[in-house]
Amino acid sequence: DRAVLESAAILGKKFTFDLLMELYTARNAGAVRDSPVADAINMAVTRHVLERAGEGDEFCFIHDRIREAFLVNLDIEEKKKLHAIIAGIFEKRSGRQGAPSVFELFDHYSEAGLDDKILNYGLSAAALAMNDHSYRDAISYYESVKAVLDGWDRDSFDETMKSQWLECMRGLGVSCSRAGDAQRSVSLFEEVLPHLDDSRDKADLYKHLSRACFRLGDLE
Image 1 (cartoon, rainbow, N blue to C red):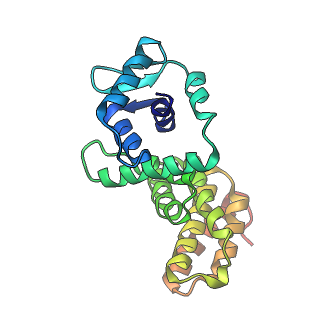
Image 2: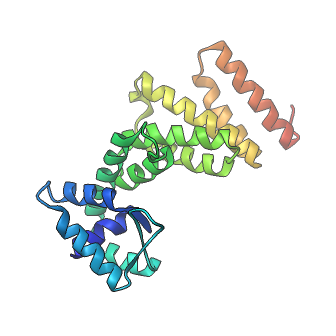
């Protein structure tokens, strides 16, 4: 069943049978039994399209090009729909042992193009990357959040969106500074400063601004 392998391909190079079953069932409005999925997987293993990954219920595509061959027939909207379903499944599993990471949730919601989820998980993923000193990764997550916010009229921001924008800009500025792009860091901080009302927030930002200026050798 090609639809089974298309669903598997959306999950990634490696996937588990139970996740594929859940995705395929959701994709087909619940009107499916175990057998179509199991039969398709067994046939794909026999034909060397898939192979078992370890001793559990994990499988993987033999080659990236094989996986890509199943993705190519899915249009953009169908891919977005499937990524949204996967992310929804992952959210239900959050908090359990072995649950998908914030990074995986962000990746699927990003592919699904769901702005509110991109903001939520993008900021969380960026903060975790910062804590791990993975500043380039943090920049990438903050840039995704910024791209969403830049697409909206800032004058229409409610308090939550304003807070997200400030968190994004501050985090992006700090990440850029620590990754070696002090010039951009200074530019970001200078853009944020006029929008800060709390004196402690201003003091914190001036601290980071001064560090970025020090890296540039510009303390005037």
